[in-house]
Image (cartoon, rainbow, N blue to C red; front, side, top):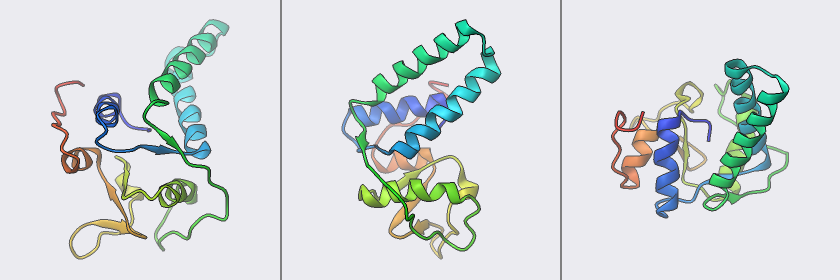
Length: 149
């Protein structure tokens, strides 16, 4: 869940209420750790003390996510993407969603969404790509973007 902290809080709360079933895979976990570790190093440095603190924070995040997330094991070959897909490393995320029978992929990274259809929806292989606020509205979560940021 590589989303801003304020959004992450809403998504974690919605999952804990059973409003949706979040999926992850070894690929997504690896990406999460890679990105968050680099962000930590950029913000705090990489001293021995900071490495230990980063490890503690990463383990705390995993403990927070484990109760509500379903692990989906995926392996290549990856599904085909749309013709304008710029990041082939998004294919394992799509594979996770397809294998887990997801209806949505939720992200703020809209420039990697498939092209919009005539109705303005971003759909690929029956997966709809949504921004976080739109997803929270669909699942009935009262979303106030500035209340927790």
